[in-house]
Length: 511
Image (tube, helix red, strand yellow):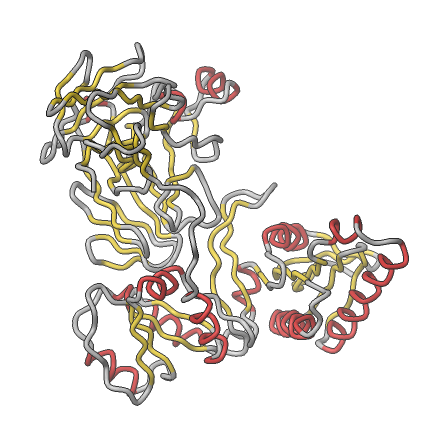
């Protein structure tokens, strides 16, 4: 048989390796037999066929994407009644070449890569399946964009939603935890809204007069604060709702209720305080706070042509992550951001997941849990701008003490984030960039020293002294966009910021 469009499905027993290590051969055979007895009848009943058994995994082919998704959800429903078994399923739709009963092609490789990202108990699928499926028949949502091993670029991946599950988007989950979620059910009058609310509309048919009426009755809100719950939603209705930057919570009413109850549970922190005071028992006189990401200008030394950093839901910047909500990309054409999850806005304008926008000086970027101010800086400093937002990483300093900043500062010190890896760098051509790449060059390591600068507090006096001979430290005063290089010891005041490498540290009065 030649090449044809098929949906390729992989099933996989979760935690199979751990189970093998804890069972004998008879028990292992029983596990594999139960997997086969569960999967094969469901696949065949939905018009598919098992291509091959890979031990703890099956590869299956379906003529129709919707049938493949229905089979996957049926399998998860059956697994749900057996706590001893946990299965993950992944699929995509594309050209497949069938040879002597086996299947080959890019779709097979992609489905296998998606499986490697799929958590236990979930059904994930690629954009090929997303295009071919009946969206009104199979509940689904995006889980983000992923770099898959051996495949170019990033691929958007989606999740099929069973009747028993509802995954709250991060903005909604955060609103539940802080008490800002306002639930409006069909037939109810909208209540008085708290400051900065997250509004969840429940029981409304998409596009219905009742939904339009309740939306029109609300005060002016950031569209990203408005969410509609539903289960089977047609593509046309999804698009009409999402085009204005509003969000969807996909799940049955029962699953939604369970998810909200789960999010309301109090999570007790067992770690120590985020603020470290140098002398126990003494009140800190100054706090040093990691408060932003500094963006070096490009091209950089004929090595870096452009680069990006990803923002996690908790406000930390990393080189790359599958859990990112936002990406900032710096290139020769300027600074751009890309929304990687719902709930992102720039100056009040919502961005759809995957949408990009150019940011200018003073822009306010809002995500579910973080508010960021973008500050453009003077080009002569070697920086294009700063992404400013206070984090929970801080160091309390007592008068008479000296604290260090850097990648590996002497004690007592505030360490810069250790962002390893080169996935976020796009290289310049030429031997210099090749040598830097081979030598493990990263922006964080190349532009900041292990011991970068020291801060000394003496009564009302705050002084910064640069410690690294080649990596410069800059000072930024409030209300000024010009970075001042600290070549010698400089006097500082509360509210100033220090910039070195890709890290911004703010001087704050202790809370």
